[in-house]
Image (tube, rainbow, N blue to C red; front, side, top):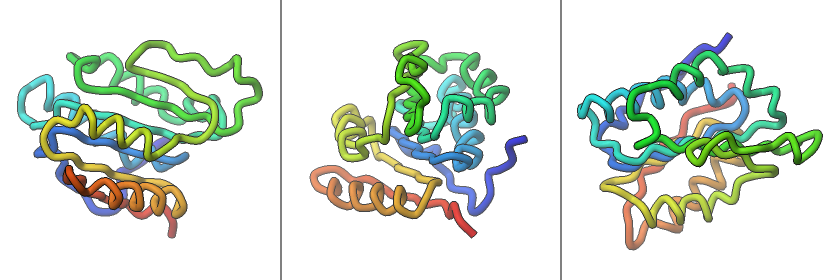
Length: 165
């Protein structure tokens, strides 16, 4: 069972570009944001035009945690126009089990290169950019540092959701 989001609720509707980073069960915090922003894009009620979800998990089996929610999101109206999902599998049994089902849902072995991901998003940035993380302390630190390094010439808002007790 997936619950959430916990913690403070942040309004991301005014960002043209949103990047959500999650590690493990931190995905529970982001699922409702993804659903809301994709629906708002389809309805024209949010400014978001680019939404990227980066989820770091140890095993492909962890995808089962949110399969019902992800199936619902993947079937949403106009989802392919706004949402890109990047799944990073840090401990695959075999790299052959990692395959990308489409261009908008991609799977990769290993850990994400945060700087490269942010550089790619900034290159295609639409309007203001919000970057939110719900993950381990080390992942949050890495993303915070990468956002800080990229404040000039663009503006990136960093939003951290507490992952630990």
